[in-house]
Length: 50
Image (cartoon, one colour):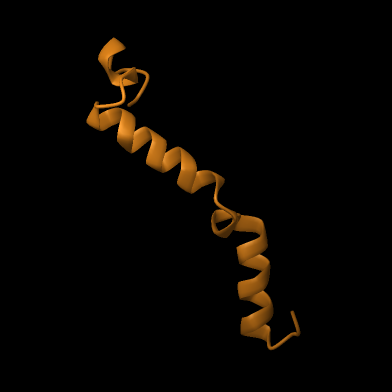
């Protein structure tokens, strides 16, 4: 969506730019690491120690 939104999407006041930044930052956050989160969830469900 970002790449198809045109040149104005790169400006800071653009709503699409803010959404892109928020998604990008969220995707980089440690809590979004799917592999680690999935392992921790499985260990908790199986009653294994962390």
